[in-house]
Image 1 (cartoon, rainbow, N blue to C red):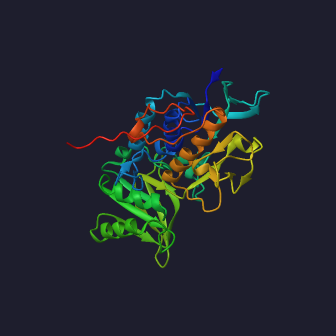
Image 2 (cartoon, helix red, strand yellow; image 1 turned 45 degrees about the vertical axis):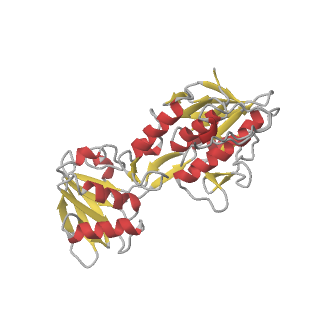
Image 3 (spheres, one colour; image 1 turned 90 degrees about the vertical axis):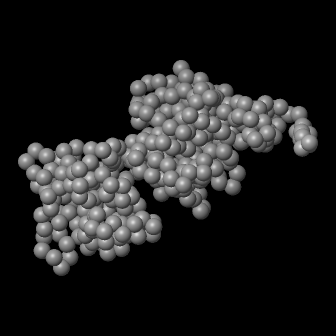
Length: 351
């Protein structure tokens, strides 16, 4: 049996940052994730995709962010149960919780934090009858290693941030990139749309709007796609890889059967106080939760995790008075959770 102070369901960026914030308060954490390695979607779906809204980093790759968070949390020695799915949640007589995975691993903790991002997920697939035939044989729903596209002909379908970002990145790697979108307008960031336009003008990418891929051809591996474009005859395009990026279908999985209050496939929390769910002692942070004004951003999940840890500390240590101390004063290991009054500031004069 695994015993810990805080049991975290989900080892993505928000779950990893929770380890750091809990560690500052001398609380031990253990993480459960169905994926075989930490990082969540950042590691599994888009490890080489740049992220632009992490404070202090003008640009950071998703897998690099994961590595930084692992490095930051390593000092607090978190435990991991990877490659297993949290199946059941039960409250014990002493008020603690027991969580059992699909492989029978038992975990016990007074606090459970669900940081499962979108939950389990599967890609939205285009309506092409034989697409399964070419999955992993030229058709990719996720990009883990951009190098497989080096000097290859690539077609990307979609109009959101992922499609735009990968078009920009692969324009530096692939021999030919074609972006196909069923509308004339893109839904991604304006800066990304402008960048793709610049690449199009420079003849570094091809862009086909009011168009969609209607068929795939090839013997064993993908060899070409058929494009149906408004006011144009259907055109066959020779490609080595086809990447449809139409988003994900999120599913909470077994968590939806835990008695939590669910809204729009997300877990409702009390955002005015502590991000606690309708079950006392169970919190939800990151993309998996919902509340008025919710923004699905990693940095917002970091804030939620920070606030949540303060209240988790009060539950685990009801006899101690929490005093917020800045790490610039105490250092990472300086918090002791005592009930004593805050010491006077130490002032050093400049001679």
